[in-house]
Length: 156
Length: 193
Image 1: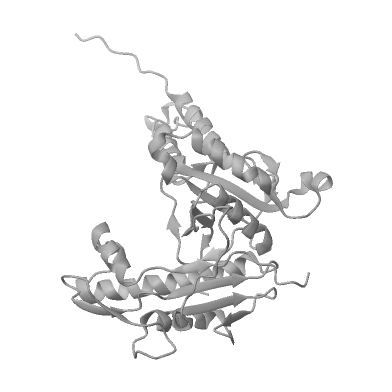
Image 2: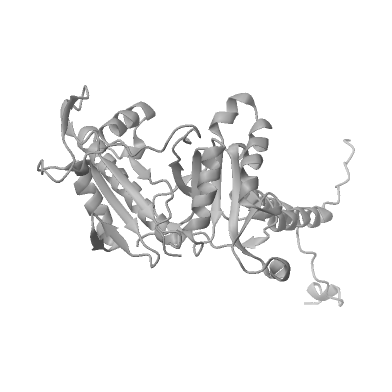
């Protein structure tokens, strides 16, 4: 007995944390692969509509986004609660869409220009008048490949 | 005797990786970019007058959505749940009905052989200015779903696999049998407000 209790001061053995970095790295890689970088800071708030027949947007570099929704709380004082369009980081008028598309397209590689897709991320409560206007502007700018951003649902 | 290499203190490694992890959690978003892919028609040149192209009435399926998100298919009030079946019946015209699109016979090569299909059918979607986006997308979704189901059925019949498992060339051949023709009307102002 005396041999075992040689040391009266009991010390906690140090916890071996050498595998902790590995675990955290694993988590990190998981999150890196399943998430995507935020494209812009949203100035409009929107919840995309739901649909079932969705296709994934493949090449990120070929996709440009148009956001449609009501201004977020901090901008509501200035811009009101009407539906607004956001291009890149700023509010825009629908007449600016054409220039935006042409600018973005000319910045692309020549062989990629025809493959540009415009993703319309609009709130599900948006009135179709706004969407139709955007579609007309896109047609005029020859951005014919579009995608209505939506979230997956399983049934009606 | 080999020299003992002193162990590197790696206790801060966890902190560093935590930092990275938190950075990525903050700057990324979970949402995947999915959407209903559509193709817009090419713009009409400004010097060209908008002409009403003459489409035989039987080849046309008119879907109208009003400002209260109600659906009218061929002049009848319909529920969104009926639209898919309605569209499939219209695209197929299995019984060669006179009020469904005209059937054409064409040889699609092996393994399809000669198939009767509605070559000239058009589904026209018309919406009001005040229609909600969700209602509009529901209609688009149902129409795309109708085509997808028909193509999938075709793939299962001739290749015994789903449409999505086929290679691109075969998919294109099936697309020729069921060409997706969803037309969106030029926006019109129907009066009112």
